[in-house]
Image: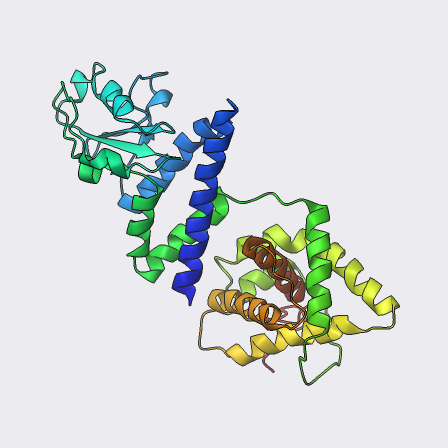
Length: 321
């Protein structure tokens, strides 16, 4: 189910960010604290439709508040410290110029549930309801869980761009080799014939097939084409011509999906289908879900480049024909 896929990814990314902020803060490495202000500015705007700006862009080091929305009269403190004292310290600053504003507190690393039942000193009488105006990862995830699937997908795509993990090429190659070995033993059934690849422009193929949200995925992972080619070649030199059967297997997943769904949905569902094949294989050794998905995404992008899936505009090759 896409809803489960989107939410699981969102929960993993936000939780990982919170954990890293917590651990790095303990080592007095505070770069993620700074970057998180900018991240949460855009993230909260996306979630709530606010128009937040970083107050430090206007005036440096405003004590007590970090973000401001002058349209909706909101000021926000973003903090890795979640205590009653932290909130009251912010409220006690000279915030008189924000009379009539809503004050909100965002805990970026710690659970803040216990803070929602406290009574706070609020000398400038800002509008502040702790039960609803204190946010943490858990409360944000509850909101996302109850979104409709289209909204969840927007959040999912945002986090994929904002919190993209830079992968170690050696680790990728090792994992890809493992996954290709697994796939080489899968019974893909019919067909081992090759397909002629007519030279073409990758960007033209993306546009021709109306791949919008997945265009970024293709662009990110097309650089691994030669890495995959080397692994396939190593297999084939051993006299085990498994590359064609694997590529044909990915192709058949594409064919089975038909043309009813959108091209972007089709691309993502091919990835999900191949992941399921791997997980169900008898020789599958579990690995972190993110690593598995990354490698399968690379394999499917490679299949796209080799014209095993989607139309080739240069040669008018249609995988459905």
